[in-house]
Amino acid sequence: MKLQHGAFRGELPILDARLLPENNAQVARNLYLRRGTLKPERAPAAVASLPGVTSPANLYHYDVGNDGDGFWFSWSSAYDVDVARSPIAGDEHARVYWTGQGAPKMSSLSMATSGSGPYPSAWYQLGVPAPPSAPTVAEPGDRVAPDPITNGNGDVVEEIAYPPRTALETAYVVTCVTAFGEEGPPSDPSGFILRWNSGAEIPAGGSVEVGLPPIPSGNLDIVAKRLYRVESGGQYQLVAELPASAISYTDSVNSDALGRTLQSLDWDMPSPALRGLVQMPNGILAGFFENTVAFCEAYRPHAWPVGYQLAFDDPVVGVAVVSGGLVVVTTGQPWLVTGSSPAAMAAMKLDVNQPCAAKRSLVDMGGYALYASPDGLVAAGGDGARVVTREVFSREQWQAINPASIHAYRYDGRYLAFSDGGCFAFTPGEGVEFFDIDASAGHYDVTRDTLYLVQGNGVSAWGEGAAMTYRWRSRLHEVPPGAAGFSCAKVIARDYPVTLRLIADGEKVLEHEVLDAGMFRLPAGFALSRDWEIEIEGSQEVHSVQVATSPGELV
Image 1: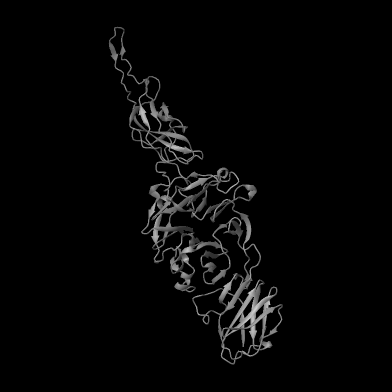
Image 2: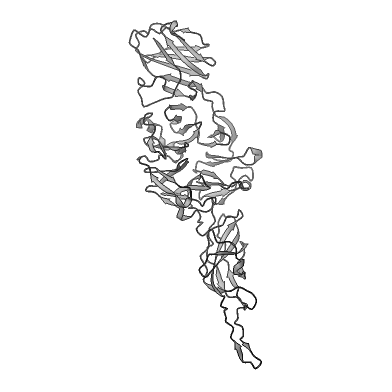
């Protein structure tokens, strides 16, 4: 009789140790099992410090500047921050946007990385507000009816129509503009007033004196105002761009000299409560507040029209971008939002009653998102939603992990999660592995294909430190009493030493340091034992382990 293990796999905690598939484990800790061997995971290696941040619990690598090394952005545990880069191709300002630190914010390379840190060191509130009041209009001082045309005797030959027949009813609005060229929604319109174009044989006085409203107060970067005019029920068109400090303007611009049509009619500020910022295809940013998901104008991350908002049955907990759309998880059922334009998004409820237990547990896995629910990990996407850990954890085992405390990341095709109950990696269909690693936050840098963790007050890179000490324990092998006269064993490893333990009926009967690939003898006296387990511990990669009743059975 021989017990043999290779093609090692992770744990399936829900199953009794006797019922585990042949190569799944009762214990799989600090292992990288993607190769099918017992390969030790490497510990995280420190790569940077985060001075000046108290209890850092949010991390983002801003990969611009600093001679190509970029900068580490971090926020304390008082915040729950989500970051998105500018959706504008070739953005010369390298703008970056984030939510979770009060009202939504934005910054540029020169602002965010000024000084010695911590970073980001400066920012503006995201969005451009409308001016607080409407412009005022008044007739110019030269608007005086001309005298009629008379003959030499003083008789009236012709009455001059005044205002001229070309006069049009006109109204004005004003918008604010930032140093980045971002334009906000218009002010309330002025009252109507007559104006007319200047020209030959046209009476003077056709211009309009416009009083400009002040700019809004706040941490904003408004440097200019734009004045727009509408004539006789048409569209607002640009009259002039003026300094932010301007308080008046004399409009003498003829109709054929007006500029472009007002584009920012509904470019509202984002809600101050906006959270969970993510970047979607086609230049769209998305976020949520209360039971609402909001979208920005395509390639206009400062503009968040109210008309682009979707309301849901329950408060939103988080959003994640997957290949099929936007997964929205709530305190009730999850949803899938699809659409290529922010003005044409449609929401579909996914038929599973699984609320999200932790916003930071929601992770884009490519074609679907995984998130922690009270019953386990839920996969949600275009194919629907289901609990994918039902065959891995019981509800009681899952609750012991404390799913409400999970923050997780996609790395190397795995769902890598940290919680009050420890650290684990889950791969659908392959079981789960646990790690002796703690972290308060993390960030996956796609450019470097590296997962960075916040450990203490520093940044560490997953898998770049020394090999960890692993432990793998086999399923429980039930052997008829008298048939288990195991006398020899062999461990095939890439290098040595490794430690082999044999457990019989719950009692450790052997702990042997294996120094090479040769056979070694086992102690006698346990032939009547029924339940056998094999445990391997070490930091060297193991390919297989064999325990047999005779040397001839060993390969």
